[in-house]
Image (cartoon, rainbow, N blue to C red; front, side, top):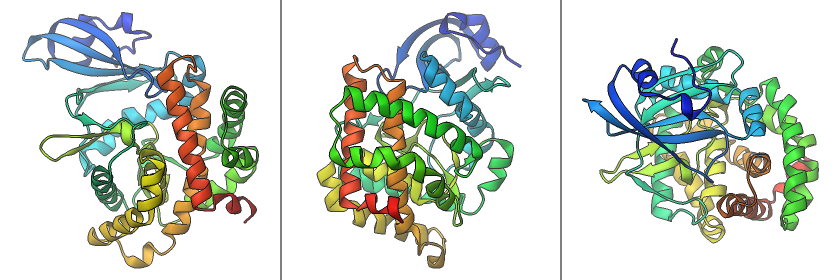
Length: 350
């Protein structure tokens, strides 16, 4: 197995040639994606050599130790490596071509080398996605879910996906949520809706996950949001970041996408229409209407659960960095919108 580099300094011409089989004679690395995510350090490698791509993207463990702990405990690095081994070829949404990857036995060290998709149009999650792009993303999501409908268990068995009912979530999430909430509540102005829900979230979390892992299920992407969705000039949608692939309700991805990738006023005006569009696309792809009857209830529950994303992510964010602070602030504000508009607080008493 190719040695897993501990830092970017160990990524040499010799290592890259061994990892990829490419005739690389020179490389230069730059860090990218700062302020967008915290679970990995992401680098663009500029290559020279014979018949080699001009650039590749390399992912290594995060530079923050708390983020590495959470990522390894939740088997996030393992999932991304296995996505390229087991899931990519079946994905109806384009994903970068893989050029090699490996993960350590403890799940704390890994690398993934992939095609550089940086030339495509990206929608900044903070700025919010226009409705035309959102409709396109929802259509693609329905195709993904239909492809893996009822077929996620096999990937749970191999480690390419983790069920939302996995005990690891029950063990890890309450701890990291509490740490994140302490940081957020002490360093940010918190919306009243968040302040009302967050202290009760951990107690309700096991029941939420139990419901969201009950049939109908599919392979969920787990982080389907604007920053991970690129739009190619030729009409393709390109999906990135496969560290949270899991078994769960298809509504999970949809709720996270709509509540976090759209501006609040757009979400208020178009939320139900996007949900209905998604359901129609599932039916067109062959999913039985009988299997989609409860997905609106799942959607609301998933929207409530997804408060976990900004709160847990905040643990590894540098709040002195304007982009990282703004991302958490934006995500919390959009969670508050969903809590109020969808009456999600009432689900805590159900």
